[in-house]
Length: 355
Image (tube, rainbow, N blue to C red):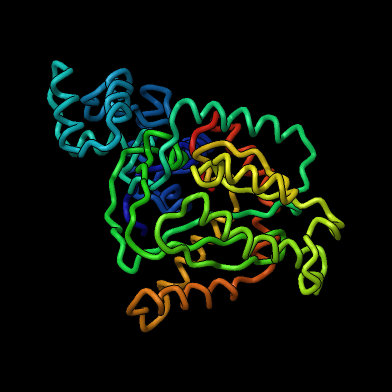
């Protein structure tokens, strides 16, 4: 005979049905494999109360009401970087009751909130948030040949970086909410490089020495961007020393961000004199530039190298080697992600996105 357990309503109904059909409690026990004492209790309850269901149990009353739970969530969201102890203290101070950190943790988990490391994302000011949002709304309604954009940027790599984490309270789908992020800023330690790509073609990776001012940037574009444009328009033309725009078959557009050396009067004048068409770009928008994903890919590749580079020259040589190993399919996939990137910025109203 099986171990005694709580009967289902269906099983109770079976017992009552067999009893009303004339079966004895002994036979019911044999047929359903249910203890005789249990069969007797079910039949007695039915005869006295007319019930085949179990009575509801009150259990231990809840410490907090639904309204209290909502207030707790509000406190956690107001200061997402607070520790569990700080959230508990703030909640108890604002309420007439006192609860433990374990209770606070349990309720926050029930409401879908748990501790996560803050995602690092560049800070976006309110002014630039609006510009990002407006730019994406315009681009969504325009026909842009993203595979004819030359994506470019500078990036800094460090031999040793700080991977410390900041923890915030959030839901699983709030990873990229503005108050759940860890804003990052650039520093001046390490190796700085410039690179570009267009559709499935990688451009050069260039070591940038010292401060990149307008003169250095123009020289960089002259030595590396123009030859890359020649390559895009046909093999071998650069050897003829003919300016790239004389044999231009496709209308390629150059993208760079709003760094001072990119948008200075001298740089703009050089671009115009060399017939380089520019893609207007919203400030603080690395998530809209697919080359940022290549920088991340390069970071992953370089961290896997063993042994690690020991000096600056070896470091850049390793970066350059890994850069040219990036597969064309990855470049194409990044370019095709542009409509999704634009939609993501629109959905976030200009705030940082997952890209």
